[in-house]
Length: 470
Image: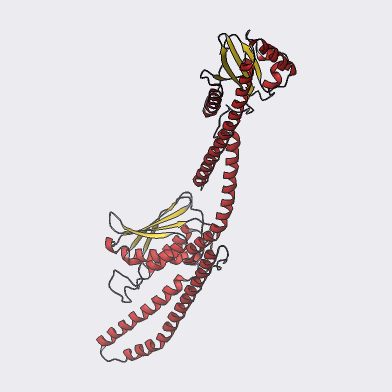
């Protein structure tokens, strides 16, 4: 936008300067032509006078004062400090020479410009400022502007030169054009600042609703219960906000319908599973009875795991300060009672509490530690405080995971241990739930195989004042 404004300003100034210059040259051309005809008339008049009468007429003109021209007859051509250059001077000189040549039928007309303070006007080369005021100062000086004086000298006869000096009436004829003058720079700067200020206000009014929409889209995956967007702003943005609110309502309704569906399935399956278990116990064949009960246990585990997954992903609670070290020690003690071993590396100084949802974070850490103990019998935990975030490394001493399976284990019901019996337990939902909870806190979970064997789970949690939701 700044580049566009500068280009537009530059183009407008270039056009304006060209037009002003052309107008000035046209005005100067007309003025100099009229002046040339007046000078030609004056020179014709003095050429027609007898030589003895010329000085008398000159004395009368000087005594009258206020004449347009200063005229003198000199014995030689006076030296003039010629000034000026450029197309303006060229227009004046060419017009005066052309007109005088045509009107007087002579070719040796000398046309020059001089400053008033340097102008010599008589045979004795007296300066203009040394003359009596009534002789020439009224016609050749325009205080305080002091414009250049046009001097025309013409040889009337040997040792006789007619000298005519006059003002052209254009004070700044040789001042030239400064394209980047102070005034134009100031005007350009004011225009640029005005355009930028108005553009900033306009763009802000348009992008503010877009920023709200962007934040809402970022938070949607973490908090479906956040307030709906304000449907304001430009027509397109308001329509987008309305569509976003409808999408949020539909997703929330689908999640609620999913919860109701799984709850209904869990409730409705309890009765037939119980009847089937009773009938299975009545089987006489011990082998068939045990196989049948194992299948029922597997089915019951799948139903409970699916229901737990739905409830786990939609756990609602208020954020509060949580001590990760204390939480890990508590979980480690619980697992040690079940035969697992959890080693926690002590931090010095102790980690500051983390703002999180306590129950959700506890479930996330419990799933990770249970997996490590189940597959590797031992979990080594290290906490690292990075200032803006806390990183948790959990290493087990199990067989690890094939590289091509590292991303797949986060999918629901995926277990690399093929058994689903009640002796091995698990339904393949723990890692998926743990990662969902971590991402709801603004963090993430990654997996990597350790060089010395086993799997390393890395949990990253940013420090923040509030949690958007789960």
